Image (cartoon, rainbow over all chains, first blue to last red; front, side, top):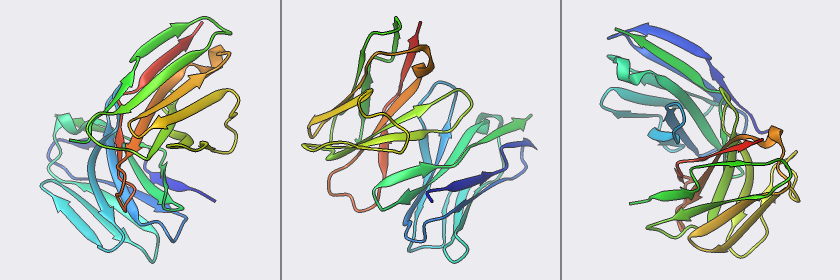
Length: 111
Length: 117
């Protein structure tokens, strides 16, 4: 079925440490994997995405890796800052026309 | 570029009334738009896919007669919650996919918070 699993559900780190969030998906035809940051009451904000033709993408402190064989993809945030605290969602395409979201990870970065 | 607006940003209504939410792509054409619902501390759940000029495709468990979707132009989709009840209270978010994009990058509206009394 259409499923995206996301772990962990909560993550607490000290400022400056790294944070890793992992997702798995079920549709081997999925070709687009975005990550969103959502603050309370706001829209999801795209922070990075990766397409199925690459294995890794980096943008400053944020990186995403994709393992198509295992149907896993991960978000890596380095040198975390308090303003990184938010809920993060992964998503994957299904039937090439819709996004299914993971269950979310609440990240808390303590100063 | 790629701005999506939603109106209203919040609405309070009485049980049994209908509420219409508008989703507009301001600077691009969107053949396909999506409607999501998000309950507190939960993820975004896709309700339906809206295609310009044709009927919407609803996800399993979403009542099409209760959540009416109209996508009459390449920049506007509307969601009408008919006979709203307190359990319909939620955060409704739309997104739009730019016409011609191969990958399913979606641009999200700011959301509409619906409270049904």
